[in-house]
Structure formats: structure tokens, C-alpha cells
Length: 153
Image 1 (cartoon, helix red, strand yellow):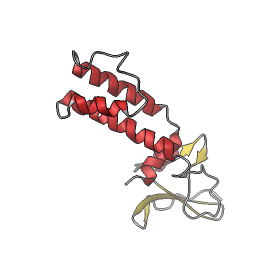
Image 2 (cartoon, rainbow, N blue to C red; image 1 turned 90 degrees about the vertical axis):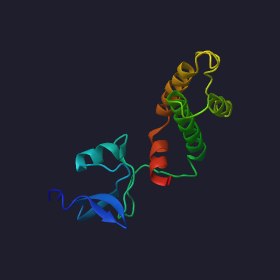
Image 3 (cartoon, helix red, strand yellow; image 1 turned 135 degrees about the vertical axis):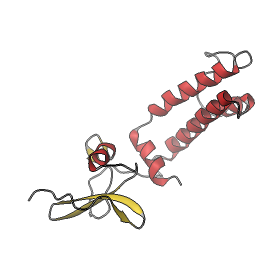
């Protein structure tokens, strides 16, 4: 029997989901990325070809997403994202350079020795920090960013 698209998206307990009729029943998966189509949903909800999770199957055979397992990396991800946001606000003139420097001292982002001088070129320094924080954020495993979207309020 060919898969049946059915009505999509569907909402379960207020959560946006996509479903397909396969294997003799509906397979429903929660949309963590607010996708606009089933194809976009399939693209964003697989890691290495494996589904991330499902709602109504006893063994979804997806990637295990555990907040406890990824706790350390989740904290590091939040810290780097906060630094990047502060650096962007420094460039916009809505945050102090001292706040950015204080945040940098709390994480392993060695930019003060290799980048522009914060005292002489604060905007260039903030841009440099933002660029390097973004690079570090991209190095995280996809499970970490998924956990952030799935668990963070």
C-alpha cells in the first residue's frame, strides 16, 4: 500500500506534527522546526538518515535525545549563544563592551589574544567575537541544537 499523506500538519496537544500512513497505521512526528511542508519536515528531522523521534510508535528507532545526556554541551551552547548575542548588541550600541569581556572570561573562546584590541576597536572586537562564537556553535552535534529547540522554553 502506498503511503497516504493525509491531512498535514496536525496538532496534538497544541504541538505541530506531521503524519503519514505507513506500516498499517499513522506515524506521527512532532515538528520542532515549524516546517512549511512535509518535505521540509523530512529534511530537518533526520540526523544521519535516522528519524529524531515520533509520537505514536512504541519504538520509533530514532536518535535518542536526552536532556541529561547532553546537559554539559547544552550549557556550553547557551553560553556561546549568549556571548554571540552580547557581541551583536555591542556592535549595535545596546550593550557594554565590559559585559562581553566578562562573559568571555567564563567560557573557552580564546579571542582576546588573537583578535582586534577591545579598547582600541570595540566594534571590530565584538564582530570578531560574534564570528568565532558562531563558528563554535556550528561545531556542536545536531542533537544539541535539537535538544535546545525541543526542551528550551
